[in-house]
Length: 117
Image (cartoon, rainbow, N blue to C red; front, side, top):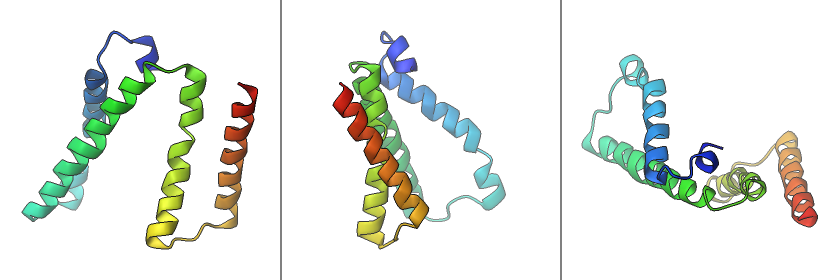
């Protein structure tokens, strides 16, 4: 909603602010559970923060500012379904009955919205 309302604000600024809020909300973690002890752990954290969070949010917000709200709502269902399928394909985690029901509900929602457009 913010990306849609504030289309004059760059996607990088929106991503920066979202990441800043995330840092503030999770800053307590290393004080309780400890700091990473190796350089590779710091490199992985930097990659997660810069590439998989910062860049991903910047691209996401850039795209959202150009789409209709109904299309954005529809596309938000794609991510959880993809995550579940990748978790199953890569790690072999099977879904429970209630999770399968949730996936079917999302699929039905995608189908019904697509048909009404």
